[in-house]
Amino acid sequence: MLKAALAFFPLIAGYLFVTTWHKTRYLIKREDSQKIYIRAAFWGIWLFLLAFTFVTSIKQDVEPYLAFVRVWADLAILQDSSDRQTDTAFWVLVLFSTLALGMFGGYLLNWSLAFGTISRKEFFRLLVRRVKHRDPHFFRQIYDYSTRAALKKVIHDLNADLEIIVMRALELTMPVSVTMGNGKVYIGYVTGAIDPGDKRDMLRILPVVSGYRAGEEMTLRFTTWYTTVYQRFKKDESLSHLNPELFEVAFPLSEIRAINLFDAEAYQAFQQENAPAVRIYLPDP
Image (cartoon, rainbow, N blue to C red):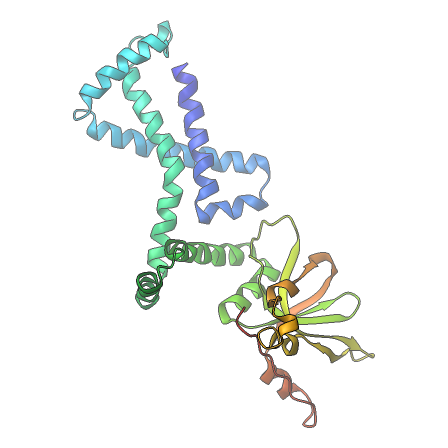
């Protein structure tokens, strides 16, 4: 039974590790099951070796506890007749240490990445908000920095074209222009999360203006200005029950013809001198 545990525990620990560490959990979402198994086994072996080294270094200090585990192991018949010369207590401790590393190692590395990514200025800004406003999301906001850093690297490693543009839009707080297959165009801010392994194949934005492309030259014509209505939510009593989030739009990726970052000033610069100015305004939700 002990021999089986020596093979099973590292594999489980490796799987827990690769599914929680940001740098691997995004990658495995686009891999087949066989490659995930190999990746989990690879990291499980390293976790096992790390746990073995750690337990060996503290073996003398925990000897009293090992004696108790040996008695428990004999009662539980964890070892068969061929394992009688094996220090079962030592290996049980190694296996559970391996499992603990698999369960919490990924999160520890994520926190390390978060503190290594966030700037000191941003950290103290969030800390001040926590002290003044008792912001309950302080730790989650810190942890999110590890998600962004790892996600950005994975997206570029996978050369995920759509996600690269969407990531830029989020980083620069710029709207995107989405052209659909039927010629309809939406310009708005990305509100959905980015995940290169997302199987839903959807993009969600908060539109600020929409229109369509007409003619052989596919000229962009604007027809609906959402920001005009958004501004009335806090002023018009009949619309006070609404907020911009209720107008988010999700698009199937299969129906998107093109997507690009949109800047009002740059758009105006590309138009003729008599083209009407385009203003993009998004009120706070």
